[in-house]
Amino acid sequence: MAGCVSRVELSVSCRSLLDRDLGSRSDPLCVLLQDVGGGQWAELDRTERIKNCQNPEFCKKLVVDYYFEKVQKLKFGMYDIDNKSFDLNDDDYLGGIECTLGQVVSSSVFTRPLELKQGKPAGKGTITISAEEIKDARVVYLEIGAQNLDKKDFLGKSDPFLEVYKQSDAGTWQLVYRSEVIKNNLNPCWRKFSVPLQTFCGGDFNKPIKVQCADHDSDGSHDLIGTFETNLTQLQKVEFECIHPEKKQKKKSYKNSGIIKIKSCKIETEYSFLDYIMGGCQINFTVGIDFTGSNGDPKSPDSLHYISPDGINEYLIAIWSVGSVVQDYDTDKLFPAFGFGAQVPPSWQVSHEFALNFNPSNPYCQGIQGIVDAYRQILPQIQLYGPTNFSPIINHVARFAAHSAQQGTASQYFILLIITDGEITDLDQTRQAIVNASKLPMSIIIVGVGEADFQAMEFLDADNGVLKSLTGETTARDIVQFVPFRQFKNAPREALSQVVLAEVPKQLVSYYKWQGWPPVKPLEIKMM
Image (tube, rainbow, N blue to C red; front, side, top):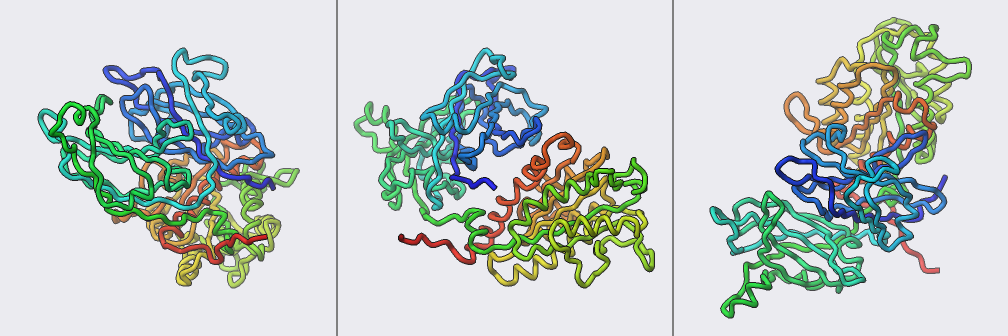
């Protein structure tokens, strides 16, 4: 297994983008994808969207794990976003580039013309990418407000927002944070925000920092209210005068254009996925397999449960792909495996939560091979039936996760892999089960096999918004990842696991951060 050398954050800016909007400029966003093999690209990250801007400098950094021994092919795509949908297929493509991470990190500044297709220039626009290694796990938490800002709008008060810049080694200013806009307010208090210390000042508490306050205009021509320069050490001060350079030069009586107040400034350690894993966190892997009648008779070659002469089917490939990665993070290699939607002996009642090994008191299989063996043995012993209910198995794993959470330590995290062929029957109960599980150390991966319509699964994934229960209760965090297997039929086996497991590290860290739990055994730097 390749070892991650380090993590790098990529800063992206563009110049002279294509203008796709009528009557206004484009609203660009940059998406970063990585080649996962077999012609498949997986999204790694995306920037914020900037309205009415042909020369965007994106505030959000794109974070990538860097492997020296891997050729990491990347694709940067620029899109004009005109709706709230997460899906980019209905947005205008402004151009992009393909390159390798090695090319970016080996260049101080990597600039290329945008292309509409590989080898076909967009005719307009360039993209500039710079990389910086993330060496510091500390994070700056800030809460900033202002008082008596200058009024910039003719018919109302200003609509202020903040931008924070750090000074690069070359002496230029690089954007590290942009706040939200507060409408019609001369005494705003912006939302608390956090920036990695490496991003904020390169870990140097004395590196120059510039804070700029401006009045937002919808056409992108923002008016400067004022600015000041400081450093992280001095940010512990309570107040700074916001100075407009031109006004100060013109008017002798000029004092300031308002006061910027630092309400709080804290520096804390932010733990990574590897901090938790190397600190002793165990990942518990559970599999749930759909045995409903819509899969077809397992004896028929048309069935999704039919095991081909070479000993595989889509269910088995999904188990191997995901399980082979997850098993490395579980010391005892004992994995509970369940089926749902079948009539099972001896009563032949429909069960939505039966052990693959027919041992409800000990449903554990030895390793991924144990799950595969149990699956093969149970197929001829059950009758595929229905309906397709997810909530029982989600609630089953959630009970174990809740018991672990009561310990109050980052020692156990649970991953449930559900492999299914079609539409879910108990959608409302499943929504409630996911909302409940989002408060627990747990992630849910759903792999859809076959050619069914998986609209409900996309709904549960909630990439387009926050999932809510029937009563309107929202998830505490995003814990569901859905992937249709058909997208990976011709891709290398590792492509599926890379995509379905991509969100798990973020989900694990987000849970423990939410709880305020450090790794069980924080790593110590030992002197040699």
